[in-house]
Image (cartoon, rainbow, N blue to C red; front, side):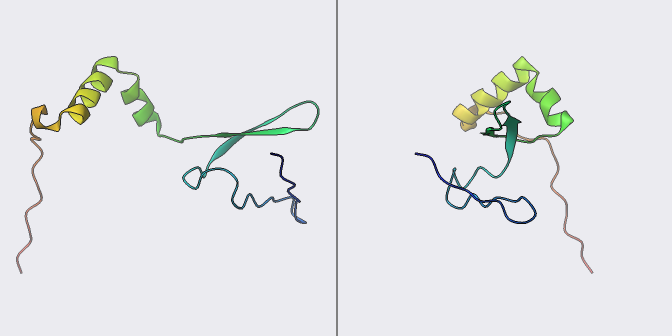
Length: 84
């Protein structure tokens, strides 16, 4: 169902209740006829993208999420409290 949106003096548009609340970033594509297509987007760091390109790592993460009891325990040390 189409919605009418008016731009303010600075050409900003309020989307109000359109879209899903968790979607706060969009890629905008402008078509030759002037129509705009808003596509929900997720932003990540280059480091995160590199990790997600590792199929073995992604498979391990998915397996660990599916069965957390089988995940290897973390070897990371917890910070010790500082005593005064």
